[in-house]
Image (cartoon, rainbow, N blue to C red; front, side):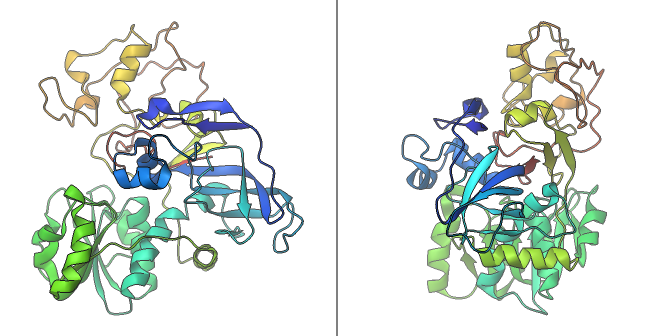
Length: 424
């Protein structure tokens, strides 16, 4: 079978599409043919292993699990002799968080693992995108026992975790304030947010009023910045470790000091969580926010070989998503290396996640970038839109024309992405 394999930590280039042995299910396992999977923040973190904690879990010097991928949706192809609750042909979805392995054509999962049969009213793509985001949000909400009447602010409500957080918080009856960019304010309101703050025009930490909880779903703020708008016994929790891993230390220190505090729970996936998400989906109370879908002919598919690649939510202020570089640290540098015959303005070369010509961060480099894939260019041609295209189809844009904002792909952005791509 085909799988995306990495044998060492590093940039996206460590990922390789290879033929590997097809797994054989044990007596208590099911063999799933994967129809859709995701490339998310967890995959990105374990691929780069920038934090020492990741190496403790995933392998000190090299990865123990060489196939990434935590979310999956597919069809059971075979079962072990002891399996009672599933049968061949069942459509299933779920998580395999600590062992990974979903970036492949097949995967084995224990019967008691975090999988269940798919809701009847959604696609494989939507099912796979309905696992990790809500699971991480639910981890925090269960920890604080979020309930009706609680006031919560969610920073980053258009990412996979943030959009799930808004919907789950409304399900539990909380009063939700959320942050978004101007373009996605209507989307966030449609998810159930009572108040939406445009973070491009207003600093949410300076807003009037106080909150019981602040959920930083993108890890862009800190406890100290948010402390002013927390109630006396308010709680801050973030999906990131924070500067100098402060969220871990503050989670240990602030409960001792009393008053406002930080929580940093360690998430653990369970079958019960996936069954709960299935219930919400079937009742129409949860829906994954999917932005774009790519076919397996795009370059993105080499990062996770299956049928489609979906970007569940626009997050970055940059205006273009290069689908063929799902996983590229710097699209411009990749183009420069692989395809010397590129027409471009000099000032268009800075990486979208890197620095400008003189070390300055450039947020507009893609606005003026033009390029022309040559026939001798190594690798497939580079489409300018998020539509499916054949690797052999030359496309010559005069400028980037992607209608959405630039979305850092989890498998390859040099900074941690706030939304994930669905590769199926």
